[in-house]
Image 1 (tube, rainbow, N blue to C red):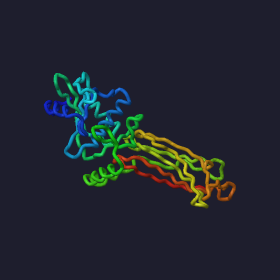
Image 2 (cartoon, rainbow, N blue to C red):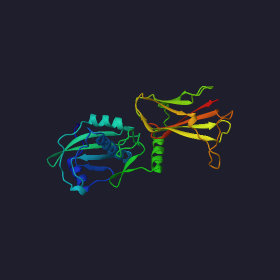
Image 3 (cartoon, helix red, strand yellow):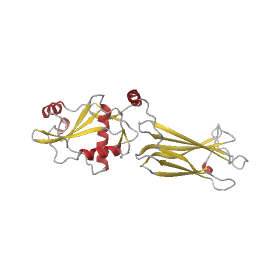
Image 4 (spheres, one colour):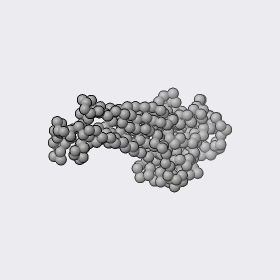
Length: 294
């Protein structure tokens, strides 16, 4: 660990005052050998990182019980290295929050002080889902001394502030997406195959996709087939997904099934693939691909 920058007397004042949005107490270290423990640490750091403002930092102190649990100073016997914490955050978060891990003596005990430092790339997001602990669909923050979630309007405000600091960030898509197999007519085969490839060295999260199968002769007749739901692709990972035109069902404006098969135009379809994913800036991006059959 690095030499401490935090004055023990100042730390004592903070401990006596209790938890706030920028100060959190933990009795012991998260179990970083377990997936749940890693998810808890990532969530707590993300919440603190999203709660701080420019020129601020937040502190997570390990080795002290919260006042609601008695408020005793228990200390820590073992603590992970800063490198271990940094590697975990590199895997579970994006942009990765800036942290510094110190060891501070206090009342004859050793405490771990994890400082979460403001970053101009704020806000920060989870890149992995861990049971009910960590979700890529949520943007965490601290409210009234506990972990909460940002509302859409709050997220938009933070993103606008980020664009004002850094300018609008435009990046090439981390995914390549497209049709790799379409029915060949005349043929009884009706398989549609889609391939999605992560071309980056980082996970891509919140991938959702569907295909619209549209009767060319009647463009208002649309059948939507879900393909992917909340998928995460690891670095360089490739996945393929299939559906069939024979699965399509169409309905008239009264909700009645439309018997279209057997007509000369029954195998003329337009296909529209919709795919969304969460980009590095935390905003959902969309890719659309189109094809025609018949």
